[in-house]
Image (cartoon, rainbow, N blue to C red; front, side):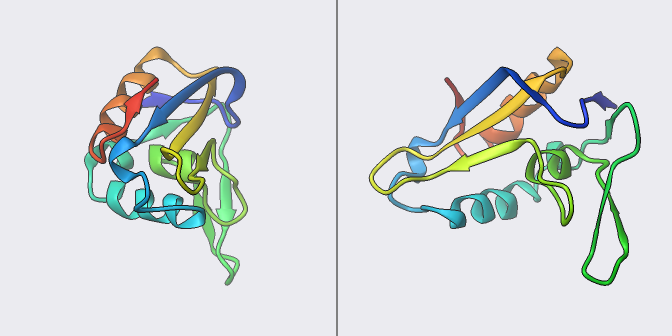
Length: 122
């Protein structure tokens, strides 16, 4: 199980760029595209442990636990997540993950996760 902070600190920012997606996904669709693709891979569903229990809530009020790497990165309703997805017109899209407080193993898993869609750490 991966140990992650409830909220990653900007003291350790890990950046991934996606050259093959330049001009193909922009704006908010970049995050949606990545999430849809990465939900298909095991690393997205890898269990995470935090210092205390964190959850969001569905529109019906049902708790959504933040208990996987994907939910920790992308967020759920009521929990913003720990990644920023930037895809500006004409530029290579990239993701910033704030990992201050993360174990080194988390970075290795992120490397594998984003490599499924051509992401490279810079």
